[in-house]
Length: 350
Image (cartoon, rainbow, N blue to C red):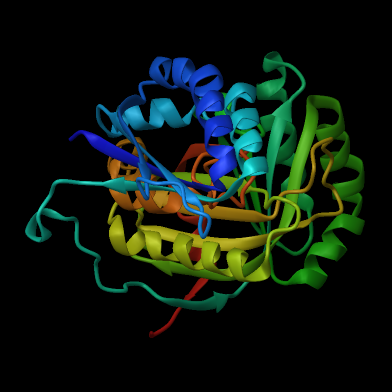
């Protein structure tokens, strides 16, 4: 299905020529290389008046959802980012929307709310562990497996090797469930943690992105899932993001499972840096976790659904005019025997 992209850029009349020059010299060549083909360029109203601004309408086409994600993967590069930064410096407003030729009967429908949860019954901390060297993987796995056996108050420890660490903040996803926050504090003061866990992390990991999770919402569609895939994403809000925009972003994320049955369990949390966090990047704001039956559910229906690329992604896209999330995200996914989310989420009624 061909995707139509429509940019609406509003400028003062004396800025239109500047905008057109920017477009011709700094955007069009790279856009074509990314698979974004310009179909038309129009201006409204068709006259310069003293009363109001002008709107430049740019209509583009992208071959399909796969090509769209390929195009989006490059939208955070310096050339694209600096172009839109220059446009923002002269325009009054801008917005990017997506169009389809489908009829009402052909449009994907929203599902009914399912699997509402009311909270969590454990305190959980999650981490992305970035290895200092690939050959240290087995040693780290062995040390953490032994060390966590003696950590008091630890209900569950799940270490999963990320299947595509190049997209993640680490090579491993490590989830630790404690009975409560006090138990987590006691665990960190224990001999096993101080003399086994922390030295293992220090010796074998170049970075540890560790966070306590502040529950915002979640759901269970398949609590008994086994042999599935857990996806853990870290997002960072841009400085100065308005609280209302952040709340709308959170709402949109939690609506995703209604549109995408491939998401079988999910949880959105604020990321609170844990005492054992050790990284040189700005703090993350959110942890967004999902269970899938298999990798295909994540890389297929989840990525290709229009609710994802045409609605949710606007919060991430520097080209959308609505971006509030840093282009640098962590996208980790690993195989799991059972669901950590199902073990902690409390089932409720909506």
